[in-house]
Amino acid sequence: MADRRETVSAERYLGGLAMLIYQACRPYLTWMLLSAFVVGVLVYLLVPRAAPIYGTETRVQLGVVDGGALISVDAGADKINSPEFQRLVVDAVEAKDARSIQLITDSLYARPVGGNMIEVRVRAPTEQMVRQALQTVPRLLEERQKNLREQALAGVNGQLAAIDILLAGLSNIEGQLSDLAKASAADASPSLGAAPLLDLLLKIQQEQSTARLKKIDLGTRLGLQKTYPTRLSEENIKVSLVAGPGRPLRSAVLAAGVALLAFMLFAVILGQRTPG
Image (cartoon, rainbow, N blue to C red):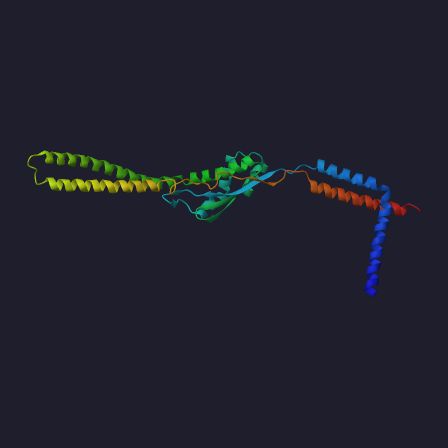
C-alpha cells in the first residue's frame, strides 16, 4: 500500500508541475513558439553548409603476361598504400588545395582480395577527382611493372621470332626439294634417290606443321585472355556522396528546442515573481 501511495503522489506532483508550467507559459505561448521557430530558421540559414565528400570502392586487376602475374597482390597493395604512390595520385588529379590533398591521401587504401584482385578505396571533394584517382592507380602500377612486362614479353616474342625464322628456312628447303622431286619425276629413268627425296620433303612439311601449331599456341598465350595490363575490374565507376552537402537541419531543430525550453523556464520564473 505504501508503494501505491508513493506512486500516486509522484503522479500528482508531475501533473501539478505540468499544470504550473502550462499556466505560466500560456500567456506567452504564441510568442515562445514563434521565437523558437525564428531561432531554428536563423541557425539553419547561417550555419555554413557541410562540404561534400564523394567516395567509392572498386577492384583493380593486376596485369599478367602469358597467364602469370608480374607482381603479387600483396606487393601491389603495399605500393598503393605507400606515401610516394599517394603523392603521385594527388599530382595526377591536380589537387591544389590542402583539403583535397589530405582527403585523398588519408582515404586512399588498398587491400588484396584474392586471385590477382586488389580492392581500392578513395574519397575526394568531387566525383571527377574520385574517378581520376581510381583511373590513375592502375596506370601507375602498370608503369612500375614496365620492365617486368617487357622482359616477359621479350621471351615470348623471341620464341615467335625464332619460329618465323625456322618457318622461312623450312619453306626455302621445301621449295628446293619440291623442284628436285619434280625434276626427278620428269626424268624418263627416275633415279633411285627419288624416294628418299620425297620422304625428306614429307618430314619438312611435318616440321612446318609443328612450327605453325607452336606459333598459334604462343599467339594464344599473348592473347587478351592470358596477357593484359593492370586495369580496373569495372569500367563504369559508381561514385556516391559520402558526406554533405546540406543545411544543418539537426542543429536547427536542436537550437529551436533549446530556445523553447529557455523561454519556458523564463516564463515559469516570471510567473513565480509576478504577484497574484
